[in-house]
Image (cartoon, rainbow, N blue to C red; front, side, top):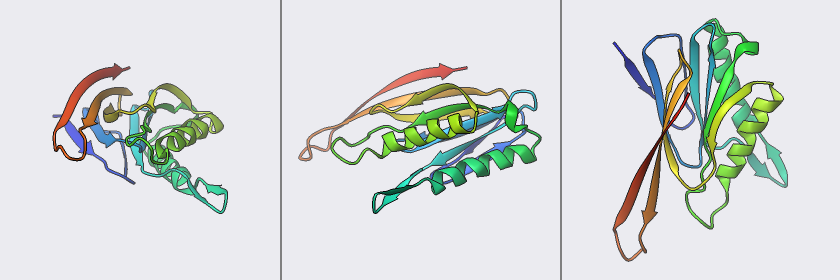
Length: 169
């Protein structure tokens, strides 16, 4: 019997259960899916704001904490850090003209994976589309549905959407 777990902003899930999927919905947030293919364990996190800035100083503690919680959760389930593989998603600029939090989140996740020498085997980052990610931790398979949303002028409540499906293996 398959089980689906849903995570939201600031959460993570690590599991060794077969036939389990983890899903989340992303806009400017990023999610990192990590798994150990030999131990068949994996997990996902949902990072709302990886970095904060104050007085021209950038602090990545929130993003680092989210990644280390996920990694430590996987290690407790039998994963080895040197075998971890990653897939990264999200970081869209959802509202034109506002600060580009999504881009900063993308920079954080790709930088963290490179610094920690974790191979990022695929990614879907940036752009202007929201993403619904479904990850299978035991195999590393990920499915991404990209939802293009165009909001009409403020005087009109009409919302038009289109859905694009991608599968990343």
